[in-house]
Length: 104
Image (cartoon, rainbow, N blue to C red):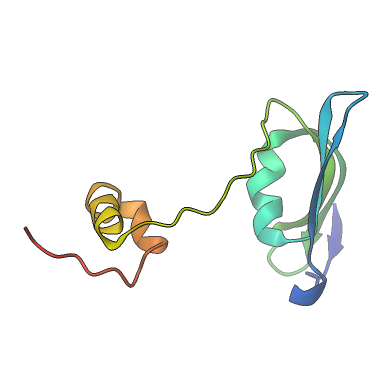
């Protein structure tokens, strides 16, 4: 296992590129949150480095397998839509913490 320090915030990056000849998506990231998220989707790692203190992956590089890469616009919800979402999905509270629930 290779150990390294986590990169400073201003130097962190995630690069996802597509190779049309092989039909594969290639991922490189030194953002720890992204490294943990994408690690399970890379079958053969070209590179992996762990944080010295937390022992968690902070740098990964490899080809994505069995994955689709989708880029979409950020959702803009009305206050009514946010409230409905919060009532039906507990995880939504993380994304809309300032929305107040009104009992009906």
